[in-house]
Length: 170
Image (cartoon, rainbow, N blue to C red; front, top):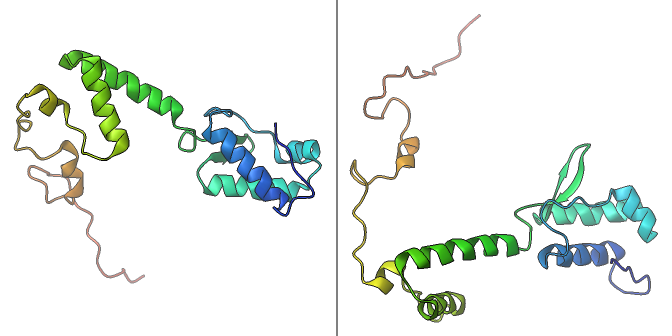
């Protein structure tokens, strides 16, 4: 529930922005949740539409919401609390730990080290004493490295290049 304190020294748009940001970050407003229209929220809170509009613009600039023309404003995936992403990452980590044969205590120690940042967390290969994997076939350049080489300079690239020169006279 959003509450605007008219007696506060904090401007109403900032009160609204801060409360919505907190609701997004703590997961009260889920990623993809549609926010009320500016006019509807302004009417509900007894504020001017420009006040709500400013709060929405600042939330959008912060990456917490996105506005789609004629479709409304939504909590953005980038601005979400990260809880869903953290849960997904935790599930992937748990599966990786299980495949690697690492026990719960060791897995938790690795996570604690990463959270504390006091010590660099050991990689799973270090934890299991396994040797690192050799580079992929083809010399080890990442597959997207070809994109950084201009067209025509890639080995085996026979596509015509666009040549630019002085402008044509008409």
